[in-house]
Structures are given as structure tokens and as C-alpha cells.
Length: 150
Image (cartoon, rainbow, N blue to C red; front, side, top):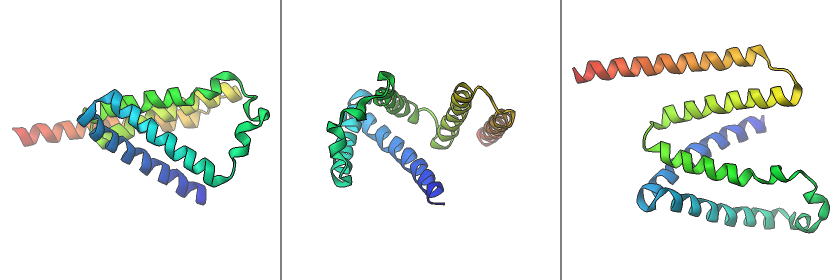
């Protein structure tokens, strides 16, 4: 149960972070905003590292035996923050969250498929139903906005 709450909290912080980053990018620029996002993220990470008492693992050679590409998550994060800052001013928070969810959903299906060699038809159908619901919602919103402006 605690993991479900953590997942919900992660989703909340994701949307709040995206909104705050958009406001900052609007004030100082998208790339500067991304830079400060990571500077403060680094400070927060260091603080958590110190409080956790796991700093000794930084100096243990066995902590660095993974393939090189698994250390590049920060680069992917920079792309996420930059794209989210850019898109936040162009797409409503609701739709951006749904579209990001769809991207995450299908990326998760592909990664699961690559790692297990199987793709679940139920996951694909679920993802398609989400896209169908999103499309229908967009259609209704467009129809309602045409009615209001007429």
C-alpha cells in the first residue's frame, strides 16, 4: 500500500514540478530553467545522500560495476525537464499529463517486451483504450469550445 501512495506522490510532484519549471522558464528561459532545476536537484540529492548515511557507497568500487549507459539517466532527465517546460505553455496541464502517461505506458510495454521477450496484449489493449478515451475527450472539448465561441 505504501508503494501505491509513493507512486501517487511521485505523480503529484511530477505535475507540480512541471508547472513550477514552466513558470521559471517563462521568466528566465527554458535552458536556464533546466539548469537551475538540476542545480537544486543536485543539492537536494546530496542532502538526502548525507542524511541517508549511504555516502560510503560512493567510494566503493562495486557501486560502479553497471554498464556505462545506465549512468545516463540524468541526460534523459534533462530532456524530460526541457520538453516539459516547453510543452507546458502549449498544452493544458490535464492533457499534457495524459499524453505523458500514454508515452510512459507504451514505453513501459516496449521495455517489458524487450526484457521478457513477450508483450501482453492486455497492456496494449489497455493503452489503446486510454488513447481512445483521450481522443474522445479532445473531440468533446473541441466541440464544446466551438459551441461556446459561436
